[in-house]
Image 1 (tube, rainbow, N blue to C red):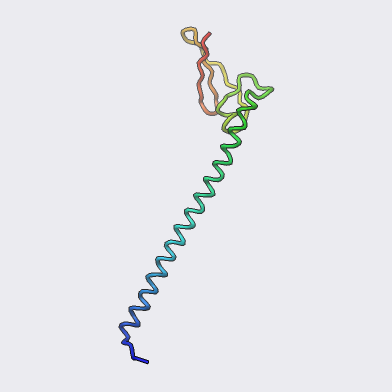
Image 2 (image 1 turned 180 degrees about the vertical axis):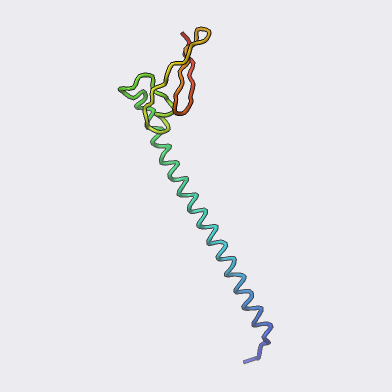
Length: 104
């Protein structure tokens, strides 16, 4: 078997070290991608719930329910009237600050 110089051996080991570092970097990147995919799956699952809530809006037992709070969170919160201006009734949600103008 031919003799190989120590420089060649060192270079081979250095190459292996480089590849290992690349592998570790890719593993970290893959972990981040998987975490993001899990976040996306959860968000999409929530979107399905949001889409289903429109079929039960307005919820029973809540007068003037905030559409945003009910659709996004599934929580019926009463919107409160604000002082009307120019024959326009204003309603505001104290939770999400949504304002709706209702023409009188």
